[in-house]
Amino acid sequence: MHNILKPYLAKLEKDIAQDKETKPLNLIVLTDGVPSDDVESVLLSAAKKLDKLDAAPYQIGVQFFQVGNEEGAKEALEELDDHLGDEVDGGVRDIVDTVTWTGGRSSSDGGIGLTGDGILKAVLGAVVKRLDRRPASGEIRRTRRS
Image (cartoon, rainbow, N blue to C red; front, side):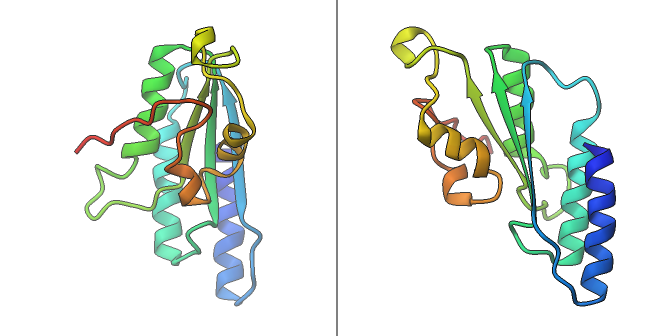
């Protein structure tokens, strides 16, 4: 993720200084396990940089699409989604969204089914906030912790 975001943010900073537009970036990350590297600091750094540059709210979105039911992964991704900027005074912009797909066609099949709405949330939830707030494919919406 660092190898994608660092050069993109450098280009964005240069383009803003030259009053040029930069095409928004939407990263879709398919994962089945707990992150093995420090994803949080990379995302936090990117969100801080976007805030510093006063970039458009949709400039960068990172969508984690969890395939499977690994609880440790789900909890880690939900933490990134809901609490990325909690350690920063004043917080940072929300650039992360997560969707989980556990297989099956519906919750009655023992899984969260994948629907058109779920795919739309998976693809655009990190950049379109009304989709970010919508539960995906029968998923029970998490409540935000204070």
